[in-house]
Length: 579
Image (cartoon, rainbow, N blue to C red; front, side):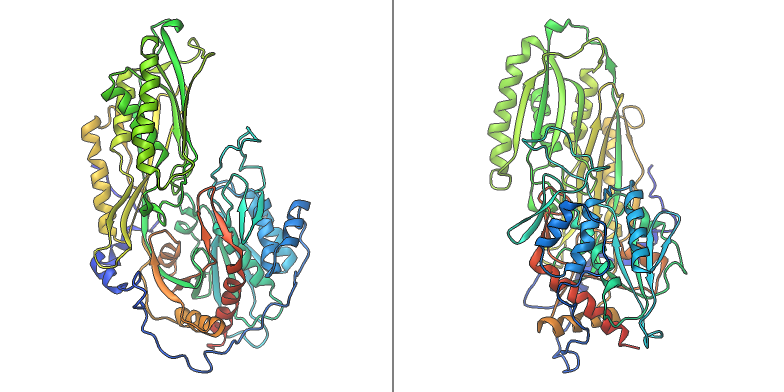
């Protein structure tokens, strides 16, 4: 029987989040525009006036050493130039999860240029510290929290057949109308724009502020290990935290889902092909061009999962068409929190079944897959082509039995919404994503990975039990190994009244003459984990408008960035004035 592991004091204690129903009642009205989560009040005159000084036009601060491409891009961007200058560093510095030495070095260099303290804990989180401005030494300080890594997803382009190297290549960003996008890759505005905002805040020339700590965590996009193993006090000293990893402008997030990873390993029996090369035919199948997207924010949209699409085709070949298929390799997805937008496999069939195979693949794609997603996926593509130069002597293939076992598991692993909130219309309560699959040539195991989310700890525990039940169907510990629930992290329990929230709401009224929306999100923010180490931390989250996070369609709406940065500045100033 699998047990849920506690990772370094985090997560399991979060059962105290309470029942899903209580959570839903607390958040009633989040999706209902007629009612606000927080009772509305007329703002006092003092609350409706801006207290922070705006950033001077064209203010750039210290000079950063940027490549020519990014200097030119920066010149084309409007205000706030100071923020975009630091975002150029995030674009030109490789920062895939778990390979973050280059971005840490860049942050350390920036800290030296800004004359602020640089601190790093054992797990690799970075904290820049700036003392309070004169006269505000006793004012409340603030933690600005973001993460340094990015989801690395790419598409092959027609003019470049070499895969994008996220370990070494800079992101090629460009302006398209009112949006900032990247060429054939994720942009990394999640959460590079948050890091840039924090650095710009450190460099603001006339900001009223208490002590500022800029916490930049590691590996948020994979294991959240930076937040799980965050150093305890005195690494952080302030008690108000503004997370800048949200993707919706004019909204204040005060709660989020928790989540966990689940790994499945299928033992594959490799055999030398008994048939001669002339008696067999090898095919490569590729599915590409899917929308992909965020496994939390976009899981309810019904987008195609490339891994599931290829599983369905293989299952149709084996079960319906009675074709003996033997896998050589198979892969799909490249991040546990991204909906897979591409998948590939290589298979061997008997030469006598080749024509039947080709007809069946095309038939299933045209008659079943395409009609199902025609209104959602307008760029999805499948091709299946024979491999003429396959080396039968160098590569063993999986036998038909283990191939069928893997396909059966792929068909059974769930993907999508498990349950909608019973009390909050439109809010996903629990979901799971079948996000990664890999088995390379001559490997004897195939690895599948799922990522689950829920507003309820109880529902995460129950979902883990359901996934464990698959073991009995497929041969537990003999053919299929099901890992323990790992990297479990708690949701963030919402607080509907706090100094941070009140300051942020007042700042929004002062800048935009209207109330900000207050909500919870079916995605993972690090606030819950940080509160596990710092229980008194008062947390909120804001951000500019980002669409398509975790996909190659990721884009930043440029018109929302000035308002987001001004809102952050005004909130920090109002927190300082609470002294």
